[in-house]
Length: 220
Figure 1 (cartoon, rainbow, N blue to C red):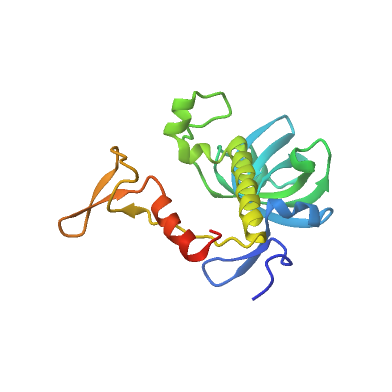
Figure 2: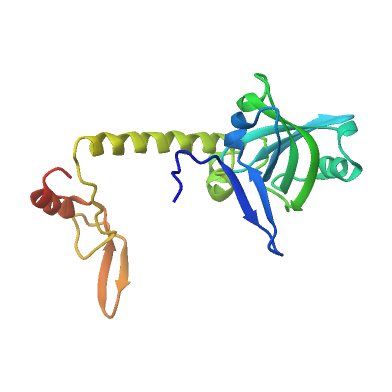
């Protein structure tokens, strides 16, 4: 198995018919400056006028601005760039360039745009929304730049805490999600049927499990 720390984020995806097509993750753009690559993702936002369009593409690993000049692409690509809707699935081919003014420091000078799938009415638009609305559409809000950043900050914090204890010889343990009793007299438990006539509760604390593990293994 290849070492995940040494492999480049260029993926091979199988399409129907057995053909293989390579595409690059946005997070790997720094490794492909002045190279022609293909990106696959979703349209996050767009702007532009006249003979140029700016498409912001998202693929889960990051965001990148794709510059589409009318005189650099064919008619089909220009038509897609003009009427594509937010969150439509796109395949974009172009040359990576470094630009400090661009989001993330890199942008794609586009040669071709292909629409893989269209999007319907998308409720989370670039305008400001209230928190109640955003929580109601949480599964879509997660695609925004702010939530993308929050999740990566959270990931780094959790990883740092995990590494801190791992480096000091602690053992990671996981408490059961379901329990048959409350912890220290807790009265507000989420109750559910558990096989036959038994009742289980969603645990509110890993204390009892943690105490047993600590007595068995020490540093947990």
